[in-house]
Image (cartoon, rainbow, N blue to C red; front, top):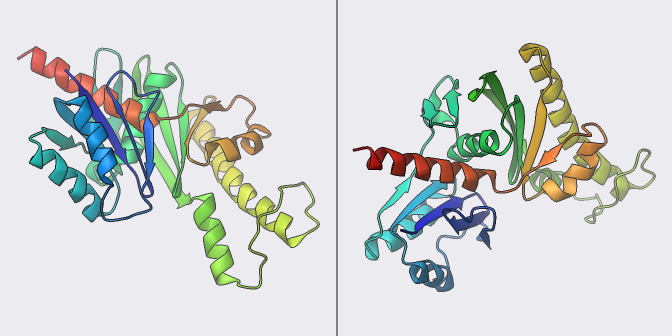
Length: 262
């Protein structure tokens, strides 16, 4: 049995088969309306028995993938957030005011994080088109709650907005420094400080409300760029990529477990 896992984000798609979610393939789609044929050929070659996916992309792109699955009679499911995820290993409660309104990517990143770093409260930072910073409280051994979170423009979107809003700025990024002495360096430093400051404040607030230390776990396309700067403020930062795929793997395993007990 081959289960295909699909993480369809705003600008890129990651996919793997169940059991290989730490070694995914990536396709940058930049919000196009369809995928190239070589992606579908790669999926067909796997002969998947079903698909478990998460999408926050434009509906046309998700429809393109869904049509492919239907045309080839491959069972598929775009999974949504849950009120509670329960397995023998982990319980994750969704405390969003409207649990179904929580982004599928954020929920499955949180689910992936509690499987990747068990035993402590977590601040899950996902750096993509948007930067999301979500508080996952450990309420008891093996039990967690999605307590709330923040959404801000990602660093690339911040940069784009700044350059479009102020055309006189130099369009090249400089280097982040403690005391920038050029406009390019000032922009780079400001963008990084905005991202790091968001995360550090969220950590401070969460630790104050939870009454315990919190581990920051980071993933996403900008993680490699931001992590060295964030580590200056959060030395024990954990970088763990593919959190959404890991969460989808947990959902797929949960579904198989339920089907086996029927």
